[in-house]
Amino acid sequence: MKKSVPRGDAVKPSPASPPLSGLDQVSREAFARLFMRMGRVRIYMTPPSLFLLLYFLVQEPAVWRKWLLGGLLGLFVVVEGIELYHYLRRTPRQEFQFTYAIGVGLPIHGCLLLVTGGLEGPLTPVLLLVSFFITLFTTTRGAWVLALLYVATLWGLAVVSFTGVVPDLLPQLYGGGARAGHNNALLLSYVTVLSVLVAFSAGVGSLLRGVFQGMAKDALDARDETLRTHTEALNALTLLSGEIAHELKNPLASVKGLAAMVARDVEGKPAERLAVLRREVDRMQEILEGFLNFSRPLLPLNEQRTSLEGLCRQVVELHEGMASERGMGLRLFAERPVAVRCDPRKVKQLLINLVQNALEAAPRGSEVELVVLPTPEGGGRVEVRDRGPGIAPEVRERVFEPGVTTKPQGNGLGLALARALARQHGGELELHPREGGGCVAELVLPAELVPQQARTEAVA
Image (tube, rainbow, N blue to C red; front, top):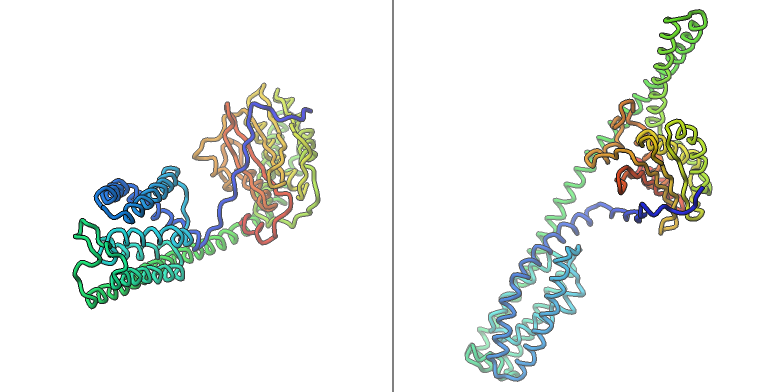
């Protein structure tokens, strides 16, 4: 047997495990979508914002304002370029990055306020919107820290206005000078009201975030309760069906035995009819056995260190006769030895199911391949490849449901049992279309068995 992987089918790494579900994950995904939509608005607002900065840079005579505006303009272009890059690549953004807000956002906002006139500039009320939206994308504690920093920024600008330390604080567009003619009492009232409104905006944003998380939690709890009820009902039905199937096995065995006894004493047509009866009884017993394998609880694993290549070689030897009768080839490919900790009897049963399906689906003259490969995590992967008609995309995932089959004589339990066995080992079984036509059944097993509770949940 060859030991190299055929080049006709490039081996792709198995997909990463999906992230854990839960309230935090749902919240993160929802706010990430909102953040992306807000990023689109920011991109639309970038050209007019750049135009205003350039206008200030050209029109203002103050040297300090020109240098600060130039630095802000460069930083603005870099930040917006990064945001545009993430937006175009649809990079998932989780929650609002607190360090980003402290290290980049707050200094930019403070400098923009200073360069456009300080407390009396037109951008000061924008802090209300900023403090509100920030609380939607960060934790409650982080939101209040940022709100306090924004309030401190307001009072810092108020001190600059009160003391007149910057004589040309107001741009020439607004008449120039350190003040716009307002007295200290008015400015003090103004900064006090703004501080209260900034804190209020942060509180409202944090409250809305809490309301959303409460709604998400209620929805998740309701979903979990529905799933729990459905699972209990399904388990009860499965147990009852298994008991019925078990009770039917004995009468069928009796019918088969009586048919064999009667067939000894008859010839001709009656004997042929009894042979048909026995074949049908065999088929019914096979269906019942498959149903019992699926419906009975998965037995504990008899785990040991096992060579996947050795198991696959045994399966190939078992099916060489079947492949030869159908005029087909059956070959094993392995780059190097791959060993995993598993129950060899159950994994062998799983592989037999996959190989039989492939031989039944593939046309005469074609070849079924078993490819054994290591995974990056240290586990193993077995791919059973055929050149059959493949499986339609709309049915590909449903074939793992009990009772769903694409074969005229199938009972729809084989793949369901196979996936249950794979997940009992902490692995996964999936079907993929094969390049050039056909199907690839991919079995992935970890190097070591995962904890029993996780395996039980995966099977359920």
